[in-house]
Length: 114
Length: 114
Image 1 (cartoon, each protein chain N blue to C red):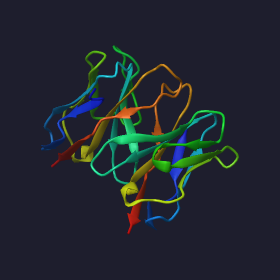
Image 2: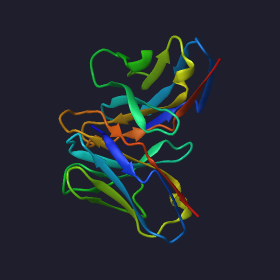
Image 3: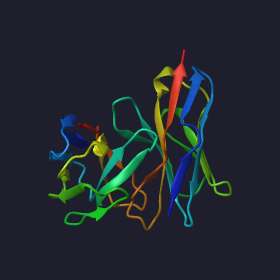
Image 4: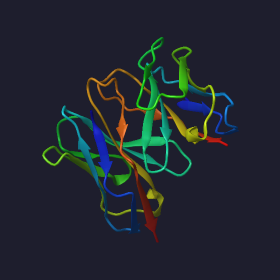
């Protein structure tokens, strides 16, 4: 079975500062990794995903994430955040034989302050 | 192209009442999913349908039933609502063309059971 742990439930940060949202996973088989964003009162939308190949993945809105197999991590980063990045961020995993089912982490609430 | 739509957006029920949450997608996707979102717990899979005519249980199926009416529509039914089912419910769909295709989410239904 797979599991996902997001290490911070809330991350406050000032505008234009860098941010890292941490995600660790557990799995006995190879995984696919995703970051989704949820703006207030909306559904989730995909930020980026890692399937294979380069461990540094770039997504929308200037976000990127690095897959680290030895540390079983997939941390999300942005060098300079904007007020509009305020949202909840979810890390998720799936595996080849799971029919596309996603296992989500608990979520990290990013709050960007002026 | 509306993507994934859900009705209703909000609903208040009394304990023991029944209701059906509707979901439809216009992307010709094969797979559809129902999740519930609770504070601090991320999203948890209730049921999914890998293709028209098939449904399977997810992580938290108790108290729910589903119907894959056709390729476009996937409904979630609460036969006898309980306060523990107060949550935000999300429907998602995914094409099966690739091993890790993106899931696309609807805007959610916020359900309160009194």
